[in-house]
Image 1 (cartoon, helix red, strand yellow):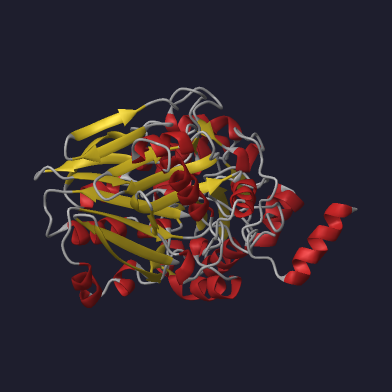
Image 2 (cartoon, rainbow, N blue to C red):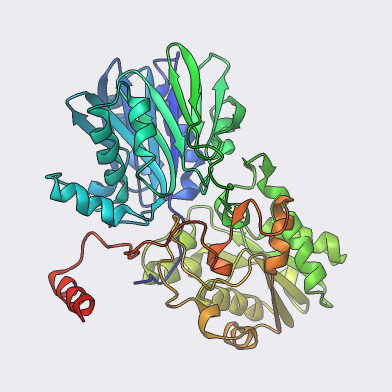
Length: 486
C-alpha cells in the first residue's frame, strides 16, 4: 500500500569521545543538523563506561530533548543518536531508535538508515527459532542478526561482518557496544555515511557532512560501500571484506532532495549537483520568461542553475515559514495539506504581471505542486512554467524512500500534458534520465541508483514491500493469505 506522500527515512550520528562531559550535547547538535532526514521521532543513547542511558520519543529533536532530559543522560565516553521517518513500521515510541539490546555477551545500541529487502524473510526465520520482537521495524531484525552472530563471533565487529552476509538492501549503521563504536555501510552504498574528528580528538560519524560541520569536526572521509569502521581506544581500523563486490549505487535522490545543500556526499557538493540540474533543465526545456524562482528549500539551488544557464533573472518568489517541517516527510495527507497552506507565502512583487519559471525538486503526486501554482496565479503571475529537477517518479523504491508501490504516483497514470493541465501550469518539463549523470559527473547510468525513475533495481526486489508488513490487521492478514493461496 502506498501512502499519500513520499518520504525519506532517517539520519544517524555517533561520537566516540575524549570529551566525556559533552558526548550527549554533541549528539544533540548532530541530530539537529540531520533533522531534515526525519521528523517522526528521535533518540540518543549515552555509554558511560558500559552503562547505557537513553531517551527516545516521537517528535522533533528540540522538543524531545529538553534540558531536563539532556541532564538525565549524563556524561559518557560515547553516544549514538537517530532521527526517524519510518519506511518500515508505525510511527510510535516503540519504533523510535536507537534500539538497545541486552544479551549474554553485553550491550548493543544500533541506529539504522535505510531499508532491507529481505527483512520479512529474516524475521520469519528468527521468529520460528524463538525470537520475540518488540517493534515492527526492520532495524530490530538487524539487531537480532548481529546479536545471534555475536554468540559465536570473537568480537562485535566480527559479528557485524558476519551479519552483513545475511542482511540485504540499504543500511548505513552506527552501532555501539560497551567499549566500541562501529559504522557500517551496505555494499551498494545506497545511503551516505561519513566520519571526522574534533579538535579534541573525538571521532564523529554522521549521515551527512553538514552534521560534522555543526559539531566542529573535521571531515576525514566517506565510509566506503561495504566497509566496517571500528572506533575504540586503540584508534580506528577497518574491515573491507564486503567492499568492491558490486558497483556502488548511491541514491541519486540524495543529491536532488534528501541531503542538505551544504553537505558533500561521496565527495561531491550537493549544492553544485542541484545547480547543475537546473542548468540541464534550462538546456532541455527553455522558455521565454521574466523571472526564475525556486520552491524552498531544495528547489532554490536548481533555480539558480536555471537562471544562470538561461540568462533569465533569478528572484525570491516565496518566503518559507521556518517553523513548519518539510511536507515531503510529514505523515498523513491531511497534515501535509494543512502545512502547505501555511508553509509558503508568495512575494507578490517578484511575480505580479510576470512570466514565471517555477523550479522544484520533484513532482510526486501533484497535489502540492497544484497548490503552489495557485498561490502564484493568485499573486498575479501571468504565466507559470514548471520545471522539475528530477525525472518523473514511475516505480517503487525499496531502499529507504517511502514509495512501496506505484499507487498515486502521478506520472504512472498520466502523460506530461495531462499533468501540466492537472497542476495548472502553462508548460512542464522534467529533467531527463540521460542528464542525471551530469549531476554527479559520472558515466551515464553508473555510480548511482535511479530505480524510482527507471525501474532498474541493483538488488533483488523484496517479496513483501508494504511499509506495515509486520503489523497487518487480522482481516487484512486473512485476505492476504486467501490471495496467496489462490
